[in-house]
Image (cartoon, rainbow, N blue to C red; front, side):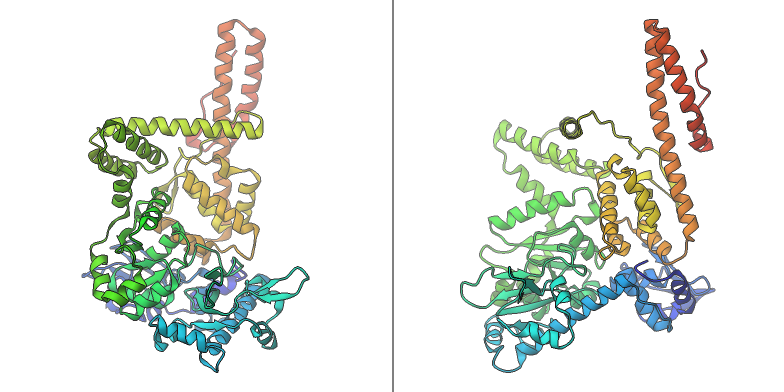
Amino acid sequence: MAGIPQAALDEIRNRIDLVQLVSEHVALKPSGRGFIGLCPFHTEKTPSFHVDPQRGFFHCFGCNAGGNAFTFLMRVTGATFPEVARLLAQRAGVTIPVGQGQGDHERLAQANALAAELFERLLWEGEAGARCREYLAGRGVERETARRFQLGYAPSQGWLERLVKQDAAMADLQRVGLAGQAAGGRPYPLFRDRLVFPIHDLGGRPIAFGGRALAQGQEPKYLNSPESPLYRKGHHLFGLRQARDAIRERGRIVLVEGYLDAIALSQAGITNVAAILGTALTVEQLRLGKRFSERVIVCFDGDAAGKKAALRAFPLCVNSADLWPLAVFLPPGDDPDSLVRRAGARAIEDLLDRSSSLVDVYLDELIGPDTGIGGTAKAAGKVASLLAGVQDALIREKLLRGVAGRLGVSESTLLQAARASAMAEARAGGRALATAQGAPVTPVRVAESPAKLGGRHFSAEAELVELVLCDAEIASRAEREGVFREFADSEWRRLGETALERRANAELFDAADILGELPREMAERVARRLSGEAPPEEIRRAGEEWFARRAARKAKAERSSLIARLRAAEHRGDQFGVAAALVELRGLGAALVSTAPEEDREEELPRD
């Protein structure tokens, strides 16, 4: 994938010494035919992390992490599959040919790297960056800290031309968002007279920039790079590359809102911190943080805006209990930067130690104080609406218990209200879709038939998402047949449609980018398949079997409808209707028998 031939991946896997690679991150000791050590992916006192050098595989019996050299390095560094493949290729001495798409990415990354180097040089050299240096000093940012985050300065003019002289193409500078284009076609610099914050990926490449205005009244105060083939908003965290070792050591990651908040806390010794780039917190950012620590703490301002931000955040991750973060609210009037400068790191650490689950914050704020029967009924309606969108039964039960206790109502009453809300939303959605298409819609539910996959049972919907990530032909067929529109589970539908959207743009598609959104075992299995452990024909065959089962389910649904027509015609004494239904049933029977797996074959059709 991503322009890396399968033969090169096979050669890398054969040449890499997995024990040596893992030993750089884990203290291993011999055990039987392999090696054992403390797992780097979860906290444990007794070693349960095993490495099998003969099979080139690792497995932890504590957290069930497992995979090969590719998946190990992806997990331990947070890098994507293509990045890891190229790092291991360099280590193994394997030459990987550069495809067109990968060549574009590397050229764009080089343009960003040249810009980051120039901005940093302009900050510290000469008079041009003097005012920016004064601003940093006024904010208490030390030179060593600024160097660690590669801060820079973008003057009002001249720097675009300098980048072009360093062989950066103007077209590439425009594609990564460093340059805009005026009405007359003349390029202009996006960042002008700004303190610049490079946004790095986990491999250390600058993929985008943020700029803080220095002039009084300059708007906007903060300006971020637009999306590009290298950068997608809401999918990255500023400072994560610098913080990841501290996050693993401390066992928690602290998310703050702004660049300077993260920088100030890091400078004060709270180095396990990253920033959400000034946007609203996203599910993708939570998943990214969870790759490094199960304990994610989000800092919110203590004012009304902070409470609103918390209320917006929880519904985004309500369907994934493993994503529920902790929350901490700062004293009114403070942000992390001002609080750490005013009260010191200990005050921040004390707040973090007292953090509470975001679900509790959300429910307390949603339900509010007891205002009598009317207030309780209104709160119950809000919670019922929330519960109606929860797909997982265990999560729904957990929320039900907590909410029912807060409201003083029975769980059955609240569940009944939630079901009524869900039915109302479903009816409204069905009417909207029917109106848009001019006909009633009866979606085919494909979630009822689990498919055995990798030793575990997953829904058919989950299986197709996995296959689409692994194979372009399967993805193309799923798109042609509009399969994801039929999905009952909204999260699998979203992931499938996301994969198809990114495949439509070869520059943006990288299946490894979506691995963090999948269940852990499924993500590891996809990564192993992508690294070549499963032959392409095996994946293709699994796709054919999936579509055959879908066809059989659709035929069964149509058969049930025809049988109902037949019985109704018999009841009316409509011989013509009986004959027509039997003809259709017999025609359908052949297709049903040919497509259905043996265990799903239907009984003989009714005889006339």
